[in-house]
Amino acid sequence: MAITEPVKTSASLGERVRSLRLPVEPAPRFFERKAFWAVVALIAAGGAAAWRLTQSNLLGEQGRVAQTEAAATAEEAKPSAETSRSAPTPPPVAPSGDVTLQSTGYIVPAHQILISPKVNGMVVALNFEEGMRVEKGYVLAELENVDYKADAERAKALLQSAKHKLLELTRGFRPEEIAASQADLAEVQAQREQLYSEWKRNVGLRANKTVTEREYEQSESSYKAMDRRMVRLANNLKLMQDGPRVERIDVARAEVQQAEADLAKAEWRLSNCTIVAPISGTILKKNAEVGNVVNPVAFNGSFSL
Image 1 (tube, rainbow, N blue to C red):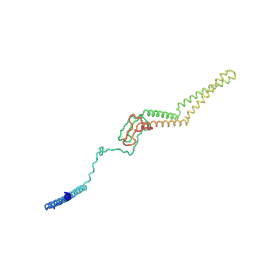
Image 2: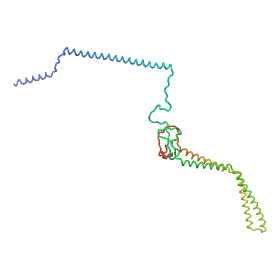
Image 3: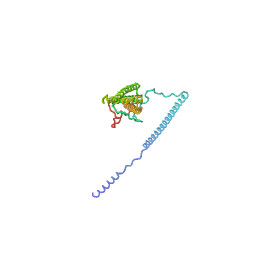
Image 4: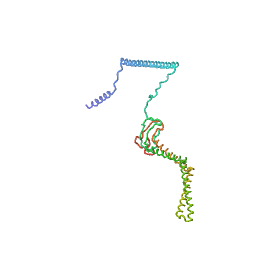
């Protein structure tokens, strides 16, 4: 028992080692090799058929392309022949006022102008909206013009007054006024002669103590007062005949020029109460509404329409 035990162990290990070998496959049989080559032949036949089908499709496509190009060439040649026989037909023109092309997008201005009034006032009328197309001279807005109209009327009245004053100075006194002054001078001269005679008589009577000293002094003062009045009337008559001084006429002309300047300024302010478009264009933005007060010298944005 002690000897056979190792022999059993070595025999079992050998069997286990032999069991680890790979099994030997038997050689293929004849009919299996025949089936394999049949499959290979079938695949080759299918590939050849596919190649022939592809070639035929390619040739058919090339033929169709050639036919299409030939037909197009014929169509192009046909109109050219007809054109040589008749004049070309002009393209249709859309009637005036019809929309031929409509598109949407943003307007990018080439020149952007800020429309601002030249005078301040309250907006009483607005005649535009954003996106509106306006022509040059179109009335965009109107401002309240009560004060400006009153100033223009006052300046006009002052101008008329200055003109009449200048006209009076340049024309001089009327003949009737000169004649009235001459009559006053003649009357004073007559009174002076009478007072002079009375004064001379009192001089002789004074020496004889016939008149009192008081009567003599009264006659003398009356004569001298009348003499001075006659001199004043004579000078006034000469001034009327010579006409006004040149300096006074120049002053009157200057007053007329000043009144004309005031009137022009008042009318300019009144005319600027109506705001018109300086150019033709499109309204991009609307900055004011009716009732807003605009001021051209403001810095807070309330200066633009």
